Image 1: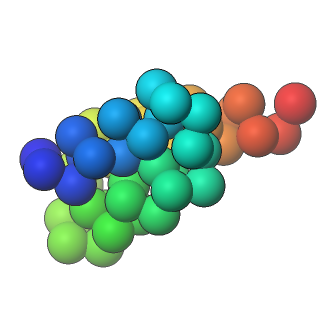
Image 2 (image 1 turned 90 degrees about the vertical axis):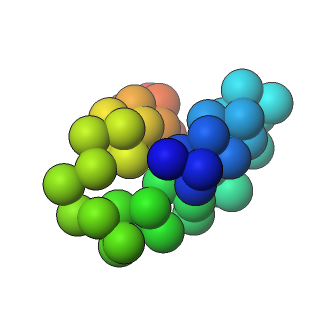
Length: 49
């Protein structure tokens, strides 16, 4: 949960790459982490535009 909070904070200040790093770290610890998956999906969809 803490890693997702850090990732979310980075995403809010426009630091997408750092946010992705922390979401991926959270997902490594718990592959079924819904917050990390949703955060990565959101950031990756923005990144693809």
